[in-house]
Length: 214
Ligand code: ADP
Ligand code: AMP
Image (cartoon, rainbow, N blue to C red; front, top):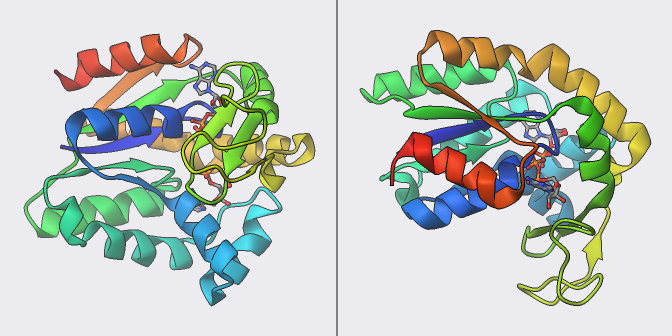
């Protein structure tokens, strides 16, 4: 099964992608996580990506598309994958459609987690991230067992630089301008499923499973 997650930053794409990946036994691929890992390792790609991410802007397609194509060409992707945070622009979506078509393949679903802007600021302000293993928490809705410590790997949790309120507004503007048009793109491809992302995490997950099938 090949799935892309759509939705505003902070809508819950990563949270749901983790659960879907576990249930269906497919890798969860987050371009944001790949960029953050590169930033942590101090790679050239990380240095370039950071300058855009810190401003709430998208990393250019020229740096993003090949990175994702290389990732989905790896062996663990042969039975499918769930993409979280890619595509974020029409050219990214078109590149993915084209690359799959060349192999006689296509996406199965684009799952749009719908959350209005007014809920997003609260979601992002309360998000705490583990930069070591990529796990995500929320101080009110998904708190770690010990405050500030990752349940999975024991590392310290942080408020991501790009989750600070001044950057969140810019990210929402970028989302509406560049990423939201993908909803129509996948509607036209007849693979769009929209779920109400304002519900609690378990209900959102049940709605997604109802679409994907058990
Ligand atoms: P995205 O991957 O779309 O940026 P995340 O999955 O990281 O979003 O979720 C953003 C924040 O909101 C996280 O702190 C997460 O724990 C929390 N969250 C996710 N889904 C829900 C939900 N249904 N209700 C309340 N909080 C949620
Ligand atoms: P995320 O972890 O998905 O919230 O992404 C964090 C940041 O990484 C975004 O605000 C962008 O700057 C960058 N990013 C992640 N995925 C992409 C993508 N597909 N295209 C461009 N930029 C991306």
